[in-house]
Length: 388
Image (cartoon, rainbow, N blue to C red):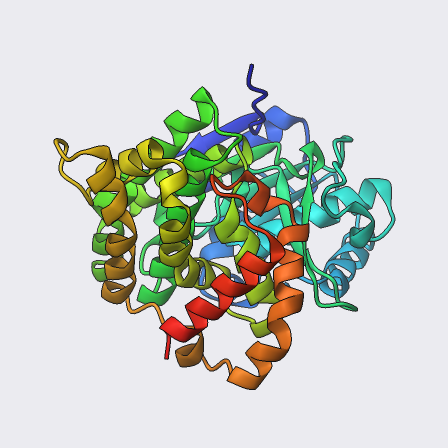
């Protein structure tokens, strides 16, 4: 038996962001607090939502001071701003950071405490302030997941927080909001979505439902990621990638991620590497390390991504997957840790703590090949050496 969690309501398709008053009406809420960032508030993206609300005479306030990697301090600032008004829901407009911020704020607004009180393996399933997620990137899938990632401002730990409390009640998935997104952002978020789908498919918690979502996402990503990067106004590619991101989010939210994400979060926390980029740095090597422990699934993923011919044996398809992932990184100009600017002394001083944090997150325990802390450290060092 599989237990599946999804938003209560989803609007999907070009122009759906302009229908957000309909979403609020169906949910029985009418006083939204909009959480976003300054760029999206200045470039007209948020205006798409606020114009629709104004046309229906719905009062609203906008908070646009979120940060790229939300921290306990930044979440607290949004929470205090929320409390200054009279609001019955949150509309999160943005990529993973505004959405993750909103999820945390919605939970704390109802239940109090500090986010570190709720980090995994704690499960928070109590009802909280309704969150309507409006993603503006095709990658994080946060609009459909029951997780949020918040960094502890005191320790620097990037905390995984899980449970139904973080599940948005509604998602408005409008690919038009991703048109003209820059190459680097498109590539990094697209690989993030690919990792969500691949990890969900090979996860020890994979199930029939998550498999269908994961394979659908992998197929679309294999067909459209490079085009979306190279042709930012290509509506077909953008729509396909947006749907892939959402499907991949559903997949991993209901099957869990594995070792890539477990190792990626510490890289983001210690070196401030964007999340999708750090996943991209890791996924070829982690796949290479893991592949022999679930050859049939890695082989099918390779075929669906278009990295292997349909008639290829499982062994050959699986063996070629890591090589294809390295090649994809090269094609999309994914930097190494060194090229990103991480210094060896800083890396060496951090790697043991990073390894401990990766294991503590629980995600590597879902991997086909479950690592020890020492094996995670060795793999981090091999990835570093590969970038020199």
